[in-house]
Image (cartoon, rainbow, N blue to C red; front, side):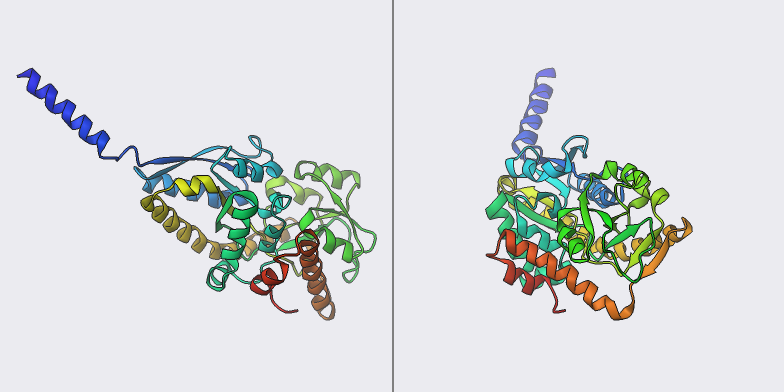
Length: 323
């Protein structure tokens, strides 16, 4: 009686293996450019948990680490070469590979509109052509950058101020008369403490993650640009996905982009928290706001044009608004 039972068990095992239930599941190695407990990693963590809970037999994401695993400015190259399959990062960090990626930060239209008007398709194609990367999703939309300072700014006059900067708004800070200095996030607290910088550019959320509120006295309004954090995939990995895997991933992408509506509430809550930490608001006079915004966007697009003039006119048409 034992032999037939063994044969049946063996046959069942063969049937399970040949059914493709296990073989069809793909494991994606992923990295985040942002620290585990920071705001800009929260949505990615939720996305990963959802994919792993619902994707059994189809797809699994294995997060290999954050900035401690791959420095943020090297994440784009890690995706390009296939060291990782997927990354939670920003085009700001791989603008050396794809200068046009900064258009995401200059977007004045929501991602849904960019998907409808061809803006997403164009920037995705540029990523594929230049860096072997697929732009899968945008996981922040509508959040702005602000200038934060530890000294009072008189009527939006930034002349001579030393501001911590990154390439995406370096030209803008220069247009304001400030001196931009590139300081790694981990060194900004000390730079503020020692007077190396008198302020910094940063999104409307996240300064508490880094402890910078202790050295910050003012936030300038209005904000500028549109903080872009996205999911980027190695193109070779994308090509390996079968129809079921792509359909599943696209469903998850639609879900995670719908979550972006929560960003504005997060910004409101953060500003209230900043007020509670005695960070005052400095409002640029209404008569100067239009000029402030025009300087921001004109300098941003000019920077892309200088690096790669081929696509800038079309990108600005699709991503921007007339000022």
